[in-house]
Length: 95
Image (tube, rainbow, N blue to C red; front, side, top):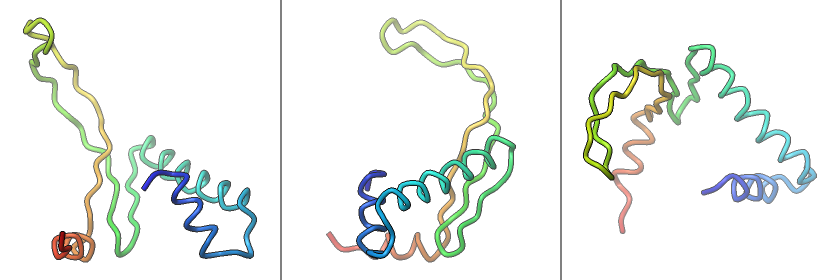
């Protein structure tokens, strides 16, 4: 699902809300998550999962085009950790 599909799904479930308001709500939701993670915080959505920031150590990588060794600096990266309920529901999906 992409962002526009999310906006349309929420708008369809809430016909009393104008599409522009739904777009603003979705934007505000993602902006708040982004701000919290940028501050090094954690975002937890009950029954869904949590977003955390992890520190990644520097390492020696390889340039795939040339094969040359490249130093990759340490960085902070966001990580999503699904809650058990979500993991179980996805694991039980049938193709």
